[in-house]
Amino acid sequence: MTTPRATSQRVHAAEERFIPANDVELCVETFGDPGAPPVLLISGTACSMDWWEDDLCRRLAAGDRFVIRYDHRDTGRSTGFPSGEPPYRFDDLVTDAAVLLERLGVGPAHVCGVSMGGAVAQRLAIEHPRLVSSLTLLSTSPALRVNKRPHPDLPPISPALLASFAEERPTPDWTDRAAVIDHVVAGQRPLAGALAIEETRLRRIAGRMFDRSGDIATSLSNHWMIDGGSDYRSSLSRITVPTLVIHGTEDPLFPLGHGEALADEIPDARLLPLAGVGHQMPPAATWETVVPAVLAHTAG
Image (cartoon, rainbow, N blue to C red; front, side, top):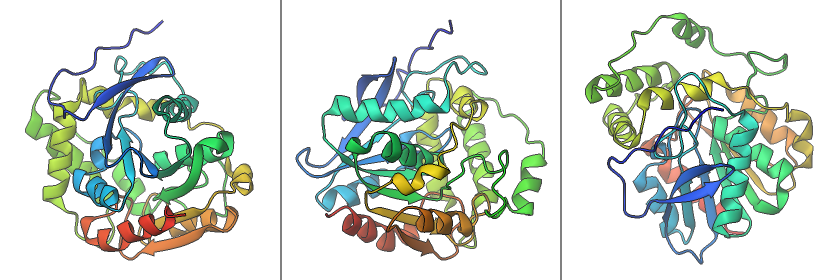
């Protein structure tokens, strides 16, 4: 049996707390009035909750929402495991989110997931419908591992991104904060669209992630070693909650056709394209569009 590593005792916010869920402890932070409609934010692969920036969470909370963000297992301050030995599967990430909502006792929540977190959100709506009151799916796909499973109707990863994946990137000194920040930012560049990357913003996120992670090397690697979970695409028609699909028009990992497929295959879903955006968290320049759209979508 693999022994979980200890969570970090480094920098953390007073609002953070730990919730036991699915044999791990998840680090959770909330914004806003607990009596307001709950919005659960689910991060992507190898991403802690830091990618849902404070300012974005506060904007959502200011719209009378109770905003919940959390660190996936093996990221941030949640329970982690030795590097290269993740003793869990993608299904456990789905169960983590479901049990977290149950333990928080917030009732059905508006669930927002980005990239892999969007796949978790879809699975939640399919397998735990009583926990979900709406879906917002950002930069995600009806087929999480499209490059490993046949979905010929979905556009492939861009050749430029594939080429960047094939390039060998030097491993940084994982104890060197500046080197790790450089490494994270370099990894984001090929995923951007036509909009210039917000390097200052990315460096701030990467620095906070470094400061909060018990083992940054593990946080950036273990998720990539697990399976992609069961194929859920054939079950999308079972999703009955209101669904908003937000997708960059220049996403090189999941090109726009993935967002269009989600909007077509989930009953009554609506697509909001973000011009020039790649495979990334919504840039701050898009928040004037994204935040009102999410608040309107979660108002019912």
